[in-house]
Image (cartoon, rainbow, N blue to C red; front, side, top):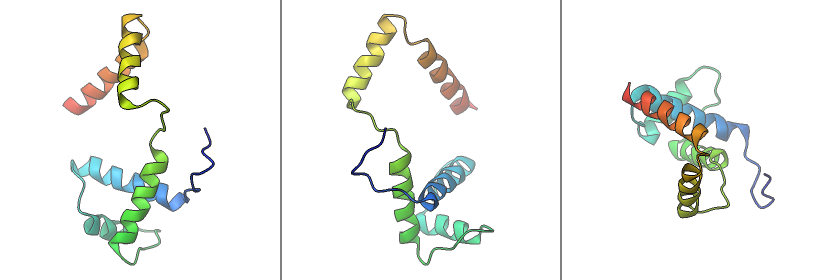
Length: 106
């Protein structure tokens, strides 16, 4: 769904967000912004950032553009999941949850 008042996010912002998430997944926690920026700048074939604050700004833009946009608030989504579960419609959701739980246990 297109949101007309959302600015177009540059590919670099998406790449920065993905990079930060991959480093976080590999290390088990997110390093500091200065550390992440240094890792980015040391990575081959990337355009370096002059300072870590610009790197963080790009991450925030990429993260914001990547996250799903729901029209319902968290309470409404929770209620919809409860109702779907009561009516037996949560099979796909249950499968996804079990995969997430299995991945976090490893």
